[in-house]
Amino acid sequence: MKVLVVNVGSTSVKYNLYEMDTEERLAVGRAERMGTPDAVHVHESGQVAVDGSSVVNAMKAILEHLTRPGGPLPDPSALGAVGHRVVHGGEQLIAPTKIDDRTLAVIDECARFAPLHNPVNAAGVRAAREVFPGVPHVAVFDTAFHAALPPHAFTYALPHELYTKQGVRRYGFHGPSHQFMALSAAEYLKTDLSRLKLVTCHLGGGASVTAIDGGISVETSMGMTPLEGLVMGTRSGDLDPAIPLILAESGMSFDAIDTLLNKQSGLAGLSGRGADFRDIQQAAEAGDKRARLAVDVFVHRIRKYIGAYAAVLGGADAIVFTGGIGENSALVRSRVCEHLLYMGIALDEAANGTLRAADHGGIVEVSLPRSPTKVLVVRTDEERMIAREVVRAIAGSTGAIRSVRARPIPVGVSVRHVHLSRADADVLFGPGYELTKKRDVTQPGQYVTRETVDVIGPKGEITDVAIIVPLRKQSQVELAKTDAFKLGVSPPLRESGKLEGTPGITLRGPAGTVTTQGGVILAHRHVHMSPAQATDYGVADKDMIKVRVEGDREMTMGDVIVRVHPEYTLDLHIDTDEANAAGLNNDSVVAFDGLQ
Ligand code: ADP
Image 1 (cartoon, rainbow, N blue to C red):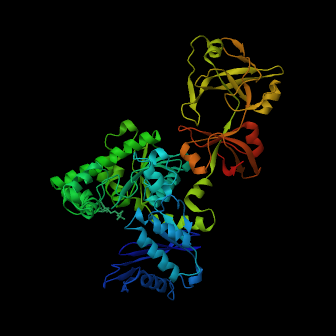
Image 2: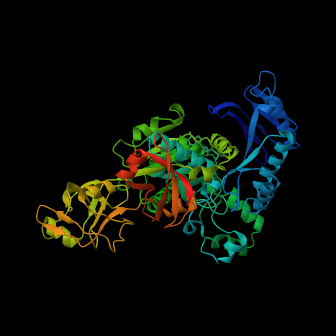
Image 3: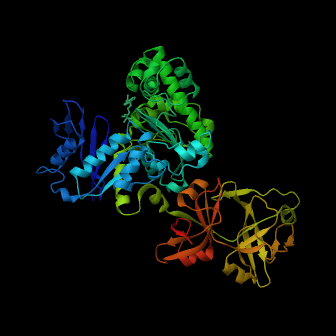
């Protein structure tokens, strides 16, 4: 399918044409200096004057160019969709959306949050619908990737009515870039995105940082508007909210303050040398004090956010940099990562100084092999990301949110195991015996011990059964039905910890034998997830869901209990009988198939 992605700004119309079967880019160009007599259409083979008095004219020129003989789109009806970058989708448009009049009305309504962007984006949509009729148009929002932010991250500490009545909250921006970085990092690290904790830094003219947990944005530095957060080219980012009030009181007009914060601050305001980071970096290296301060403030703010977001995530698997500065300035990456060894970040200065993402398929690793947290540099491609989202929206699975919903759930097969109480551990291994760690299991803080116990039932016994700690109030033995037959017990299907009325069993350790009064269960299958993942799937703790199993033993598993906790990693827990019946192992994934 061919997808045309357009990005309409106040003075430009940028476009990219993709063949999405291969993701090959067939054309790229832009009409610029729109609204002036000097408007031009710049394309692969040169530039021509264009009537810049309306976006419709620019779109017509683009259509003409693409459909020229020998051009990439000889037949306009071969176009599958037009994707539009729209900055603000508010709380209603939280996924890529096929555009109809109702959608356009909401985009217009969201202009109150993004007065500089949404009106021009909407004008672009209207123009494109006129010039490309009969083709689906899809809006992809900068805010959508952050739609699953949890309330504690998106809520400002203002009177609550401001949120409920006026939508004053954090929305976040640069969504396609953060999403692209996350997908690139997962592909590079060969790890399912649902298992990764990432801090992604988009450092361009605008700049933002996002904490991504299992593919979901859980915190981001830009706020209700793109003014909050990092120091940017001309935007201040974070400051004491009293400052604009004091400026107003001292006589500055609303417009002057708006211009000050959005256009005269940031790197430009600090350095006095404009917003181009290359110039500022050069001046700083030549000893210019203000330029140095600008770089220092810029870098310090990024470090502060990375530290904060590592805390939000409980540690990060990778820090990812992109944007004109993030991708190109080795100095910024080096300064940001300085002295972060305690956090597990060890930059490879040589790689950082020489490797370029553009020369290595769009992504390079610039941390040392021993660095537990990887540092990656990505060449971001927001247009490609938008095109992917358009394809998903057209396919009916309306984009970002839904596509994350369709994202696979990793499987963890629980082999029979025992949880012990302190008292039973004392009998089995000797008073006060400290069990030792063999390996971690997927849920944080739990591990399998080197020690094992034998489980003895009326009909048979199973030796060397694994123990999982921490210790619990009451011992619990989790078996598969096949194990229960072998032992000659008949435990019920139960959630972990719900042990009333369950049968007991005999456990044998090196120091002694204990017969429990209860605690043997067949563990009820369940899926662990974080609150953000639950919000994203639209489920809550204790809900029952279905999951779909694909492959040789295709089936749908119902009665899967959802268990939500901030420390949980997305994981479906089933026992060995269930895994074997469904042909699943620890490398398998299943798909979320809705609430029961
Ligand atoms: P935008 O957010 O406007 O799309 P970009 O992502 O292209 O902007 O980033 C622009 C910024 O990147 C500018 O400040 C530019 O100076 C900076 N930049 C580009 N190349 C380099 C480089 N080699 N070293 C440092 N900064 C760079």
